[in-house]
Length: 97
Image 1 (spheres, helix red, strand yellow):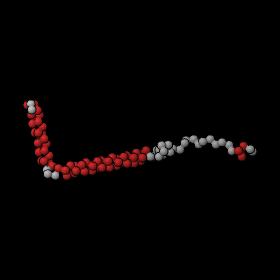
Image 2 (tube, one colour):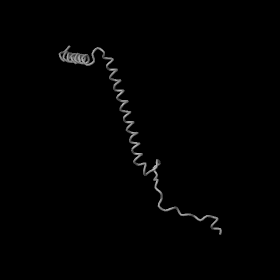
Image 3 (cartoon, helix red, strand yellow):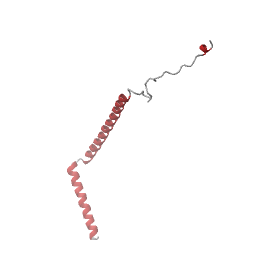
Image 4 (tube, helix red, strand yellow):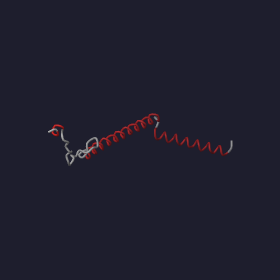
């Protein structure tokens, strides 16, 4: 075994030991339970963020409908009355006299 292999093996074992000590300090003896709790917290945070985004979309739709709804119909056409009435065509009964 060369000196370089021994050094790399020693550095790796030190890093593994430090990681295990850090995990023991942070999580204690219930490491598996802590990771499940953290995952559950992330899922809950994702659901909350999705609910806020959905509420924002509904609110934006409501506000834009109220602001733009006064001048347009739901189908995008104008609800204003034309300024000139359409020309009336003569009826068949009045042209026969």
